[in-house]
Image (cartoon, rainbow over all chains, first blue to last red; front, side, top):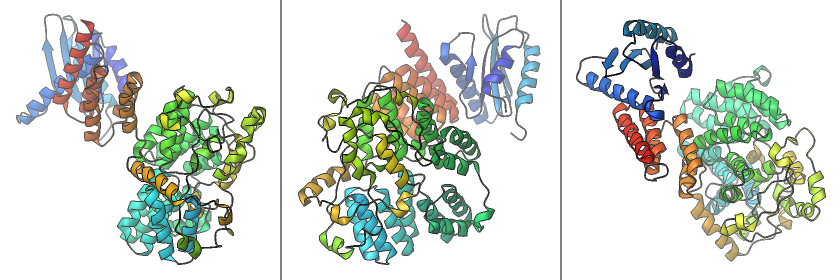
Length: 115
Length: 471
């Protein structure tokens, strides 16, 4: 069974990724957003995305599979696969498509069957 | 009369079919020590005889909380579950009883009957091997098997306790403390875990806190038998065992059971306390004492072996312990452990063999007994050694770093009682020194429990605290 720390290390190696938070449903988000937000950063970003997911579900719009947003210097991609959720951040040069592919295969490979 | 002697009388009365006498003695004991396991066990067995399963199970829960390794209580639970038709739980409790290696053949028979197996067809499990190795004084092997047993049955508190004790005997006190916390969360009144934690605190220089915890144990185990057994395996320790409490059994109860104790009892470990006083006058004697033999549990936590025989510094003691009675409160030595380890078994309450002859007992005056009883009853209501209590205690004592560590452990353990964790963390955020970390932990806890909105709010507050501190 893969731990969040292993998965975090794998995601961190994706090209252009500067920070990651990863967690399993019912567990504490772990990771490092490249020093942004300190020790609270991964939790805060994960919880905020979780809040948006909850709101979307409450409205009956279904379950979010992916969220992407852009700020003046950062791109952020959040994805869910089975029990795992991950948030990655990178600079404006981050190739979101390639990171999405890498993230999808990493999360899918580590998802437990039947989860 | 000592509580264990009275409990022995109650057991004898029960065995002789005199339920009234057994109940009277048990109730008398429980009036003074509401959580005293041997008395609760007698009451549970009486309730079982009377087909009052609820009352019996309630008492047995209390017994197994204080003594998770009590095989007789587990066997009784198994019988009661069986009677209720709850076969799964009956088998689980019966297996637990068997794996605790009961010394009483009747207990073993009762458990085997529920499991519906012959003794020679029982599989040797990791839990059994762990207990055997621990009893034989091989804590390293015990630890190895206990870890396997824990991974197989993480919910088994008795297995956790075995692991904790193995770690304690190996001197791995931090790991032991963590296991003790898990034990205390499942079995709040676990005496053995509390004794180990008291010792660990004292080894970390927090003798007063360790002593305070040890004193609280007296509300459940008034003779400090488990403390004497465990601490007796150490050559030296800083804790002071309080004096043994005696109860005033009504003369008619003693008369009814007169002459029956002597035949079946042996001296209690507590009886050895005055004898153990001599090594203090002769420190060399105390230091040279080591426990030997298969039941001696020879391993000594390593931190303890390098210390001089210390006397409890008065300034470290809580007020109530400031002037301990020298005759009653001397540090325990290896001598006692030899006595204790040969007499005490895992299912010790099943047999209660350690009471001295009635004739040797000095009856306490009724006023003294009443005085002793009052605080004991009052205190027993709040006697618990859970991590939650410990965290609150640390917060009260302004031990912020340690409190943060314990709070982190609580969140990491992901206690199923969500509101209890919420409450504790919300109490913690009220303290300026803990605010930042407590908000973050609250955020973590909210995430664990599927409340991202509340988590985001908590993390934001933590970020604000951190920002405020930086400014």
